[in-house]
Image (cartoon, rainbow over all chains, first blue to last red; front, side, top):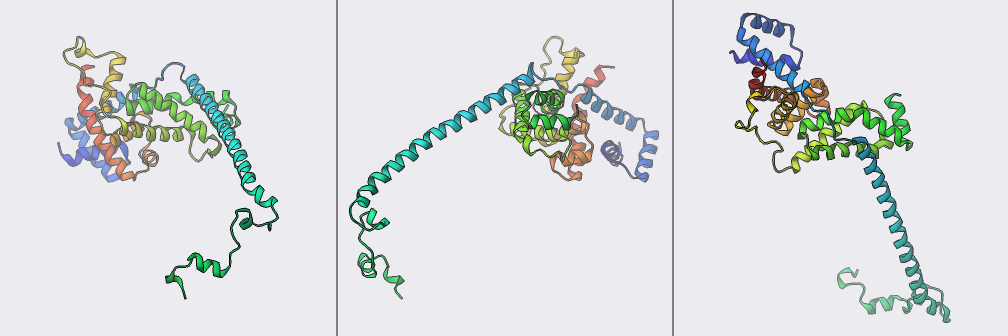
Length: 140
Length: 176
């Protein structure tokens, strides 16, 4: 069989042929029993696949989908509740720790500042140089 | 009730409306997934996953595509993901020595033969074959769903048709 005609036949199933291509194919089909048989085989194959496609689902499919959705929602609620529970406790513990650390400093007669709360000496330029914060490379 | 009305109700947490949508489209989704993966527990899981993801996406579904097309696209994508994860074929070739195998005329057997034929195709060819031959989408729609050029869809369809014909012709001739 002429491969060009065969390809033309194949294309005719999935795209619109030009008028000249359509005429060529129709003349070839009229002249060739083999080409007609090939067309029949392609058409029957497609028909068999469409007719025998399995569109069935397992029993109670919709109910099982609903069940999974409900279970998912329940898990999300439990997870959110667990996070809220943990966060509350961490937040309370953190606040208590801050009060314990900062409270004594603030109660003693010191200026109300973060440095005083942390027990750090007030910083001055001299102090900074002495602490060697600036590296020699960064000196102007 | 139209799809649009059911979608509005389902988005407002009406479980009955969502169940109705599942009933309406489960056959279409199953046809796509069974064609891609073969009828199996895995196919059932993937089908469920399609509708669960659809449920999660309900608030954002704007209806740009028809609902059937939207679900089919999701079914194809999840099936292709499942195929990537798969390590072995689900269907073994029919054993010629099994009693009755030479007279496969029942509907169930033909379904299995068609399933097996589709499983012979590489996933990319199988996807175009399922969309075009089972779901009945046009070549342009098939290309759009898969996100491929029309020419690519055409060449894959041509190759898929040839392979399917080669596999199924002996069974077609048995029926005569």
